[in-house]
Length: 221
Length: 386
Image (cartoon, each protein chain N blue to C red):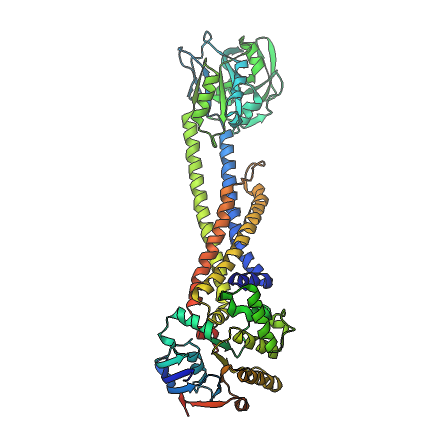
């Protein structure tokens, strides 16, 4: 059985007098443990698809079923709980909290989880060690390089052991060498069993994935 | 890591930002505290000055004789054969429960006397207390200092044809006219004032007084209570409040207080707006951060708790600092604002508690709307990325 089932997904936006059809009937099935890259030109609908997958953007029609849960049949707060328990996000601009250290940023998703402080700290430390930042726990984001910030963002996304790791252009702001290191890290996480869905512009990133889905004008091609 | 750690770390590590926010709130609160305290202190100063201005309690002998008029005020029967008050009895006024409210006691002895060919009313007064009470007196010349110096009303000076520096003979003794009063429009214009002791000797009333005027500070003490207390101490005297004066003062004070409350309301409103705008700006700046919180699964209530806890901590700090700075400002400004040099700054627990509570309420209220707005935002929209 698939981990993610997307059926006839449509998302329309109203922009002034115009209706923009960002997604026009997308059907995708993703298995547990897969590494998927979603590619396409700007405006093809890939970021919209990722946000719908992440339970943050209600579709106009169609279903998203994840680990047996129909996401958009949940209330807004239950959906937030689902995100907290089952999803990990890596944003293009990292979006680390500037006033929290690397360790605290990674602990952020655990702030709303009932666990002892020691257990939270230990989980965050392990996540940072997995991404190779075990020595920079107490650094603030502005004391880290772009690649290191990306790694902290990845550690934050995996600290709650999510079903699915969603990444939006994770190498968009990195140089090519750092991009390769980050992609290798995603691959490594996937090899360890983590399902990864990544939106990317860069065709080179496709070689790290098991499968690439290409979107054009809101449809899978 | 708990939700409150996020708030505390934000305050701890973004010191400059938090300092600006605190200062913004503090300025609003300090402005309110300064103006409210100044208004209250000035109100109290004016109240005290008004209390010192003229008498509001009159002590006359118990008498069934004919009334004699003094300054439009009905006195007890002031006749030569009537009972009089012993000067030494007046000391008992200082022993009443509200003795601290007594600003001045001005004893007087009255009696008709011949100066040259004119009959005049001689008034023996204690010049220190008399001048303190009658601050509207304008003297041409000097206030009398010695036993043989007189102060003349303007009409008396004209009728007796003397002015300051001249001398007068009364019962064989020579007196110097130290000063002449500018016209007051009252009975004072036709009187001749001498020192109390000298007048008592001239009138043959040693140790006796005809009446005493008392200037009582009404603030915090109903004048009626003081009248009763004095009457208990002086059973042979008639003690009455000069209602016209008391009512007039209360009315003037009431008007000033109403004005100060109106001013206070305007200040609180403006201060609240400053606080509101500052907090709104601060929360709105954090839209992306709130988007991240929501994206990683924070509920709306979690976001609200983080923002409101920060607002509460900043507001409390701003409340304490605002009160301290506001009181400092009021202390510096009071000497320039108040008329009397010894105006006192009023320390009021209500202003302290009120300003801190107000800071807290305003901070929370001002954060509530933007926090609600932010927590309801679509995380995608907040992040503008995904």
